[in-house]
Image (cartoon, rainbow over all chains, first blue to last red; front, side, top):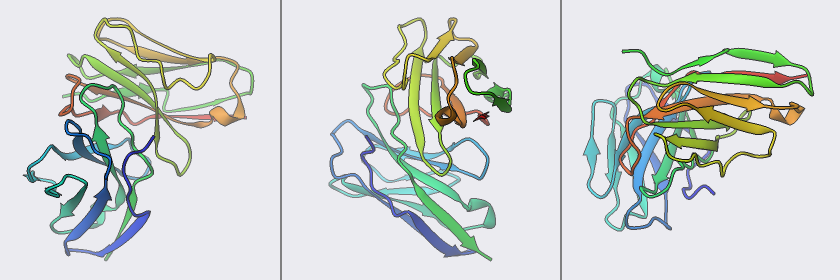
Length: 110
Length: 115
């Protein structure tokens, strides 16, 4: 029951910014927007999350549209270590599940 | 501090055998999740534990799958009479609380191969 839509794959040049889009047109008023990434042969790791306002942390920035029907994960300077599958997830605070979907596979070109 | 650990890291078994997978969550984390990830696919929710509450088993694909957790400690996922379609990476995650802003910390997974 994935509630988000992401491109299957994207490419970026090393040291350039990357904008990873996510559409979630059916988001409810209480759903949080989470991003996780999964490096090859590893478990997913948390990147960032937000509710309504844009968010920044040491890994990335999250830009949330005013109507909350889409969001963008921004990696300010892509490195080779950022090559991973990035998952955009809606988190229902009253439910127990994270719906991971199939994510966006990011390739970073040296 | 120590992260989530899972054992074994790899398990090869024959069709029809039972397997038991173990997850050690981060100490103090009340929530624990099990997921399954087939090759090239996203994560599939299996089961959720929160403290001493009844687990959410809504993601378990069949009655061959079961899981236990005592309090806020170790969890085991058991697959009985394994089938080839059970081959996947089984991931465990724990979280200090459950809610919209919670963060899940994942273990490295157990790769299960059913021959």
